[in-house]
Structure formats: C-alpha cells, structure tokens
Image 1 (cartoon, rainbow, N blue to C red):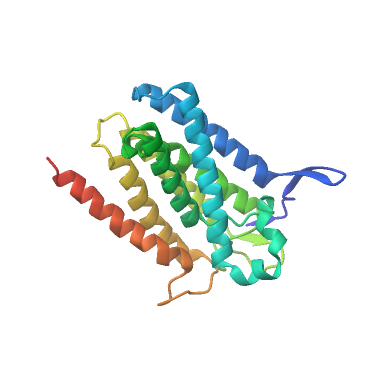
Image 2: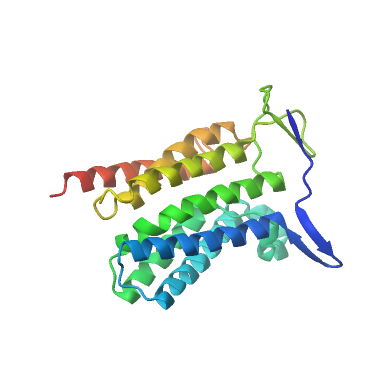
Length: 250
C-alpha cells in the first residue's frame, strides 16, 4: 500500500509557486497541439499552421471555461461561499463533462468559421484529448482529489485527512484514458467513416467512466447514481446510437 504525501507544489519562491497540476495541464495542451498538428497533416486537412494554432486556442478556451463552469455548478455551495476560488484553476476542480461540452461548442464554431466538416476536426482532436485527460487524472492523484472508496487491496492509497486506504481511482481513470487514446490511435489509419473516432471516444469514455464511478467516494445525485454517472450514461447511449447510425449509412 502507498501513502500519498506528495506535495502538490513543485517549486515555491516567495508568493510564486509552480504546482504539478498546472504543469501537467500545460504539458497536456502542448501534447494536444503537436499530436493534432501531426494528424491534421497526415489527413491533409485544408488547415494552415495558423489555422492549427487557432484550433488549439479555441479548444483550450472552450474546454477550460466549460470545465470550470461545470465544476462550479456541481459544487455551487462551495464556490458561492468562496467566489475567488472560481479563478484558482491551479487548485483543481475541472469537470470533464463541462469541459467536453465547451470543447464541442468551440470545435463546432471553429469548423464553421474555417468552413471545414466538424467531424474532420473532431475525429482528430479527441485522440490527443484522451491522452491529455490521462495526464489530468495523474494531476488529480497528486492533488489528492476525487479519491476512491475504502479498500484493503494491496494497491490501496492513504490520502491525507482520510481514514483508511482508498482505491486510487484517479489512476484507474488515467489508465482508462490511456486505453482510449491507444485504441483510437490504432484505428485512425483504417479509414473509418467520418465521425467514427469522435463517437467512439464519446461512447467508450461514457461506458468506462460510468463503471469507474462505483469506486469513487461520492454522494449519489439521483437514483443512487453519482453526478459523473448521470452525465456518462447519456454519453454512452448517444455515442452507441450514433456509431450504429454511421455503420448503417451507405
């Protein structure tokens, strides 16, 4: 078993500090940029270097705003009492489902502006997004947030301020996102129909996130389901339906 006593602050100089969370967030953006740029060239998308730069900027802004808004909504009581914490992104608190919604909206606006098919962009961007999400869950582990339920398994983790050892569900989720990334990467060159990679990401993330939520120490929102499950189940259903629709198209 492991005791998580990792200091979330990597370097501190006076009032200035660099946190693992922020550093990993930056690495996620950089990896997304270079992977998307590589894939866009491989697919010969009609995008210039500036267009690709713009795509990442749009995506980051949409994802960050959506993720933060989703977190504020899900923990409204806390942020209402601590409004300045809304802007403290380095402390964590980024809701995936809100970030995904923001990313999709930004991607749709971007594709319309550049007059390119939405799926042509979405099919590629979800690949580095899956990898960035894997990094993000490692950051959650370092921060000691979104911890799991108590366990006696040998890989249980002791988090500061909590009784007993817990499932390192953050690392489970990181592995899940790495799996999705590897799967999408493996099939990207098999000429799937436009939209397939995007909806595969939506369906697989929804299904696996729904299952992993059972290992999180979170209160139920409705029908014994957590907030994450309430949003992940529709992701799986809609994604599966869209994949079926794409398969039956001629």
